[in-house]
Structures are given as structure tokens and as C-alpha cells.
Amino acid sequence: MTAVAAPAPAQTPAAAPVPTKRRRPSIGVFLLIPGFLWLAVFFLVPLVFLGSQSIQTGTIEEGFKVTWHFGNYSFAFSNFASQFFRSLIYALLATVFSLLIGYPLAYAIAQKAGRFKSLLLVIVIAPFFTSFLLRTLAWQTILSTNGVVFKVFKHTGLLSVTGWLNLTNGNQLLNSPLAVVAGLTYNFLPFMVLPLFANLDRLDPRLLEAGGDLYAAPIKSFWHITLPLSMPGIVAGTLLTFIPAAGDYVNAQLLGNTNTNMIGNVIDGQFLRVLDYPVAAALSVTLMVTIVVLVAVYVSRAGTEELV
Image (cartoon, rainbow, N blue to C red; front, side):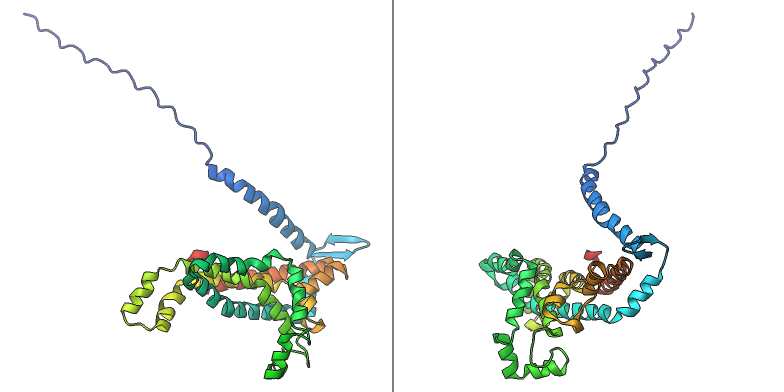
């Protein structure tokens, strides 16, 4: 009897290769293109041009050439150091005053205004509906010797105090450091209020209620709960106020005098009147690098990870 061979197992057909799906560029990449183009055209290219111009030599008649003349920086800093440091001091004072005024205002709008919140926010940004130049010119009337502010300062003795602090010149408020700082504070106050409001408006009220349940006084709840949680808003507001204030020149031009000139006035004069473009560019680069370093140190010390 012959043995019957077992049938060979049927071979299964080889699976067809799965076609690899071609990756398509994410839509996020396309959304980034306009922003990168904007930065390249209006930030990187002018920045490279400015840096190149700061190391040039020449005259407006003969033209300027890149000669790697870094002496423009030492010349600019040695001749305009007072205006440079004055700009930083005025910007710092304006930032401090904006914080002292803006924090209570933002807190009241966010936590106490109720249904009037939107209306108060519109009032805060209402100055933006008019020209920056007109808003600054209005302060010439406000601080004039015929204005109410001057009379209050004179009759309360504040004029003597500000004169002793070298914030006013003699018997007037206008054309003084006080006028310049007041103009900077007024013009950049919304930049402080808006980030603070956005931060305080998201504050969880249950945290304050928990503090009250633990018999914490309101001032203690503010110090240990509200203030730490509002630090991102404080940092954002101070940066948005300090950076443009340091480079501003309109307030010093319209409300100050020759002794209150800021670095923006010097850059304006070097570019448009003296026509010394390399020195003006060196001043601009120096101011920008200084602000970047100060901001980096400030943000790292503040420890607000939400901003970096």
C-alpha cells in the first residue's frame, strides 16, 4: 500500500506593497510664510543695512563706504553718553509711573467694573483714536503757566519740591524733565494697562475666596495671591512701555528743552540735519543692543516662563 503524500500548503500571495503616503507640507508652514517675509523685508534687511552703515566712513557729497570703522561707536558713545543714559532714566521713570497708575486701574476694570468693563476699556484706548503728535501737543496747554496743573503745583508747594529735585526749571512746568516724563507716561500708559487687564481678568476668584476662608486680610491675599499671579502682566506691560519710551523723541522735542534731549533726538539730528549717517546708525545699533540686553536680563530675573 503506497503512502499518500500530504498536499503541499498553498502559498499565499505576497502582500502588495503599501504605497507610501507622500507628506504634504503642514498648513502651519504656509501660515508662517507671510510673517517670515514681513520680518525679512522690514526687519532683517534694514537691520543689516543699519549695521553696515554704522561702520562706514565718508561724506554725503562723496558717498559712504564700508571701511569697518568701529570708531563710530566710540565717538557716538563718548559724545552722546548723557543723552543715552537720560533716555534710559526717563523711560524707567515713565515705566514706574505707568505701573503705579496702570495697575490699580487695570485691577478695578478687571475685578470691580462688572458690566462697565467694556466701556472702561474703550476709554483706556480712546487716546489712540487721535494722533500721537496731537496728544503730546495737548500737554503744552495742560502744563502751561495758565493751566490748572501749574496752579495746583504752585499753591501746594509741589513746584518748589520738583525744582529742588531738578525736575522743573524755575517757575514753570513746561520745558522740563517733569514734562517729558509726564508725556511719556501718558502716551504709553495704555501699553501698561492692557496686558495687566488681560492677566487680572483671568484671575480665578476662588483663590481669593480660599484666602478669605483662611482668614487672610485683603492686603495679605493681594500680596500672596493676586500680585504673584499677575507678574506675567506686569512684565509684559513694563516691556511694552519701556522699550518704545527709551527710543521716543517726540515728547522731549515738544515738552522739553535742550537739556532734556533724549537719544532719539540725537539720532534724528544726526540723520536729518548733520547728515552723519554712520554715527546715527552707530547710536541706533547701540540703543537697540542695550535694550535687548536689558530686556533679556529683566525677563530672566523676573522668571515669567509665559513670556519666553
